[in-house]
Length: 383
Image 1: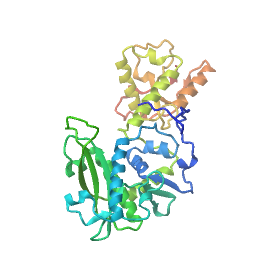
Image 2: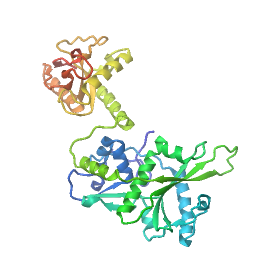
Image 3: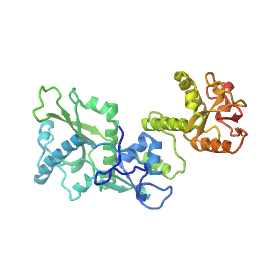
Image 4: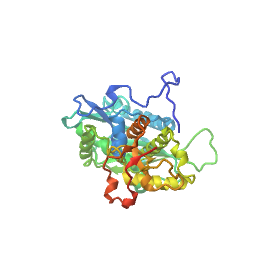
């Protein structure tokens, strides 16, 4: 979807794509405390490049609408559990699972712990400048051993009944388990004894009814999960190392955000080419795609002009002829360059009648990337 930026008055306002508050992004090796939420930690686990561009470079991802129906089920469940918390009695669902020894945990900070935007569970990680935090949905108390139980509310609409094994093995629910591990880790580091079993309170909307009648009926299920936080500290150290790095990391090959950014950059480069290369190269677009993919694999994210790892785009380069046959170009007549080098070459060529020498040593020249030396770029660039 396409998102438009609006201010607090819901008026359209220019979108810069960058964060405005200095405290919202990290400067490598800064001494000041910096907060990392559970969701941002999950971003690090998902795609380090996107995480780095967000937290260090200050890029802002396009906004998305809120999950108002999911938030409503969360809100209503919290109201129910708060009534039980006040009276210190079991919730109605506990009887179905023989859990009447459990009650909602009473604590003066419970509302702050559930406030993911402003507070949440919070620790200073190992005397570093990193604050880990996250807002939990609820915490219960096992009265038999006084251990705390981490709880997350989840809403969905699935035709199949909720089953513990299938729910936890679902590829789209792996982030839920990370969420539980993270919250259990925070509570443990805060000095609380935490039960080894946490619960997902799953509300599954019934889609089999024939009428709406101004209501949605949910089937409620408790899904037990044995959390494991042993992996978290190593990953946090990796995250801190990345935050203090000056180098933008590689992205996840399956990251759709990175893929979109790459393709948009490619198209932007083509639009900036004054010679209209994108229109001249291959009337058969399938050929252009094939050759472009071969060049992208050859340069493997390294600019073939400056030899630096950057976002690259494919452009035309021929050795000494201006009358290039755009219908049948050779792969060696194309090269992958970053935006800075692309602009530099254009600027230099506009002030000189001579073609620029291609001086950078490219990994493509090694011949170990799956292509023969016939795929190597030649020695001169001409737009």
